[in-house]
Image 1 (cartoon, one colour):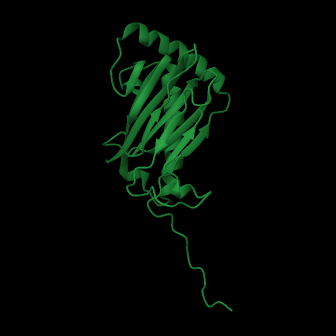
Image 2 (tube, rainbow, N blue to C red):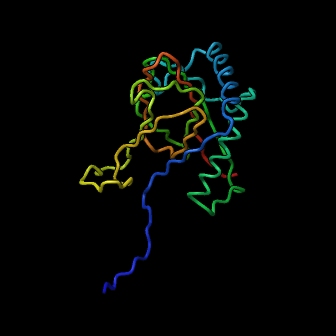
Length: 206
């Protein structure tokens, strides 16, 4: 009989990916599409990781538009839940949340090059409008393993041994992940535009 007793399993150096779904997202998304169109009309846009697409300024959650304000509340709620999940004893009373957010609008051929978000703790994206894909990877977001020397003989079915993770977004889906996690977005192969709102957040002492 074996004398070996299992003691514990620790997810060492894991990178969490949180997924949230917004109930009745269609109403908010319609409002966000209207606000996004108005902002794109008024601003030339920025060049960041976006290619062949429009990127707003990163002051989205400091703007007065009601849709942006409502989404900010949902994002704060998601970050609170995610922070508690990874650090149950986190003392929110001692910290102030700093956020930035921006709109990405990608027409046909638009994509985001591989990148991460330095100087922040959490990053994420909320999907406002996603055309149904006619090709498997159209508009897919892909996360890349930030570790080195992991491309070794693997264990089938074990997520901790994967070097990439793809997700096909849907309207109303919010993803939240550590800002160090490198990611990119496949080209939009559809005629309709893909509209998403990305964001960063960090906690600073009060």
